[in-house]
Amino acid sequence: MISIGFLGLGKMGSVMAPLILEAGYGLSVWNRSPEKADHIVGLGAKKVLTPAELANTTDIVISMLTDDAAIRAVYEGPEGLLSVPVNGKLFIDMSTLRPPTVHHLAQQVSTAGASFVDAPVSGTVAPAKLGKLLVLCGASKDDFERAQPILEIFGRRIIHAGPVGQGTLLKLVVNLPLAVYWGSLAEAIAMGNQGGLDLKLMLDAIQDSSAALAVLGLKVPTILGQSGPVAFDVASMKKDLLSMLDTGEKSGVPMPATNGVLDTYSATLDGGFGDADAVEIIRFMTEKMTQPN
Ligand SMILES: NC(=O)c1ccc[n+]([C@@H]2O[C@H](COP(=O)([O-])OP(=O)(O)OC[C@H]3O[C@@H](n4cnc5c(N)ncnc54)[C@H](OP(=O)(O)O)[C@@H]3O)[C@@H](O)[C@H]2O)c1
Image (tube, rainbow, N blue to C red; front, side, top):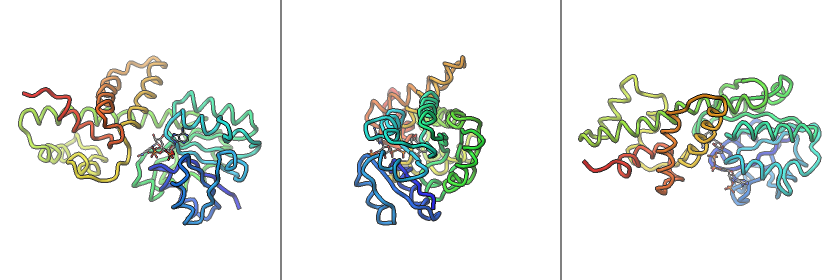
């Protein structure tokens, strides 16, 4: 039986990893904070002590980590995935990374005689739990065919965007309009609030107009201040915006909208909202960035 290793049991990884067991594969897990693995061990997974042990004991290794620094620590650090022989193994990274990091890792993995696939996802914790993400994959044809049955565990649809790195580029393409949408909604709602419009009334009107986005309905309770679990936080949105800007500017694309929304997200982060849901920029803009009338 193919054995799968999974690193990163955060908001996304903790709901994705159990699907591997449900699909009938053997599963080993590693997380930097080991106590977060206890739940999935109770479901039948094996907990390992280092990324190196994970690479040694499994055929396919999947990572779902915060950012580029985290992924490089786990691949290239002491007791990292690439500190042991990995010839013939398949590595699938599903985090949202910068394209140069993906190309660097793919090169390192290839030098070690193994295959690397980037497969970031669109969709958040709720679809992740149901295996209904949109998976955006960059891989050679052969590696894609090898990875596809595994990616289908997590996705309602798998898009093969092209060679390694293209899945990551497509992820930035998909997420950029969403980031700008939340920034524009923050400005619109702050403006309406200054003129005396009620928040609920504004959201109701927007949802019934051509300015409604599919995801807006899901986020209305958070925007109205009803507490619930945070899915995608302000710090992660800022990380992705920096990656979009770097990618766009390096390829000669002017990015005025992305620069503008980055300013709002940076202010929200600096205001102490880094762990809050990304839509909390709406409240921050209304309550903290807007001058009293
Ligand atoms: N949340 C979403 O809705 C969503 C949707 C689509 C894509 N994504 C992307 O998916 C990835 C994971 O997101 P998430 O929301 O699950 O993040 P998260 O809840 O913050 O979890 C991050 C994971 O990375 C680990 N980590 C962080 N720094 C590390 C380091 N230096 N070394 C080793 N492990 C490290 C954390 O370990 P500890 O437990 O020890 O902190 C945790 O397991 C990100 O790239 C994000 O952009 C997220």
